[in-house]
Length: 345
Image 1 (cartoon, rainbow, N blue to C red):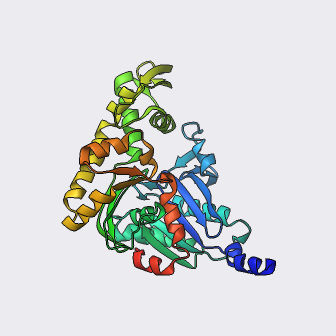
Image 2 (spheres, helix red, strand yellow):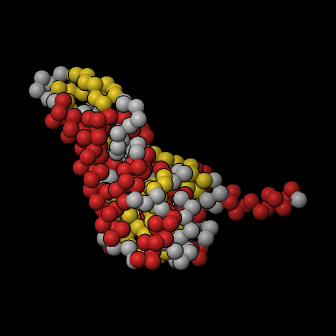
Image 3 (cartoon, one colour):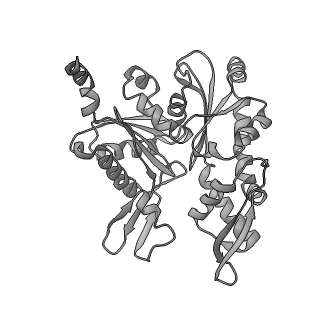
């Protein structure tokens, strides 16, 4: 019996198949039989003097805003698509090798989540990057579909399931039925736009220059989509615009809601417009089942309440919103029939 159990687990032990959520903010890698093995920022730091990669992922993220002139941190993906092909390829190679460890010499099968409205040129660029890391097969899956599967929605049923995936570069909205996307929209306003809005607000309102990392920290700590039950505030360090010297200012949750007002308005408007375009029968299903939020943006305080108030629909946050896409893509590594149905190749 012991040997039988060992033999049954051999395929999982030696599997090299990977699922990847190639996100604007973070890249997650799922290895079949092992689960999520990597979740790091999508950043590459180049040494421009030596012409080589200095750091990738978390190590490169720690360098943001603190590098000498010869070290250039790069975000290879902007607005959910590849902006720097060379940096994307180097980042993907690094993450795949790190995830595979001693099995790095093998040719893995890749399932990669991509925004639903990227162009065919962008789609080909993602696929080519996958083959350049020596993959034997590369399958592309729309991120909303992968997120819905990862969130546990019954996507193969003949009923409407609505998912809103708010990532770093894009907000993907999809209505799914029978393993197909009945309606899909990709809005290039998401977590990065929120960070930019906070940086702009701090500069205009408090005459304080802050960086991306500080803006993200503010969003995570006191950001919200609706008033909080208990007010929150935090001290923010930056550089004074006019004086050019370090300063500390105190901001509260009201300030940050004001900063986030425009990107949140655009996301809410896109959701309302999407609901207007859904077939009536599926609208009834969505009313009964509700809307599921995934992605890092789903963690913004009271966003689910804001969407509920704006649409009148039940709004639920997925159990693992940050990893829903990669978990869904990972599930398809062992479900070939489902992969064939939803593959965006």
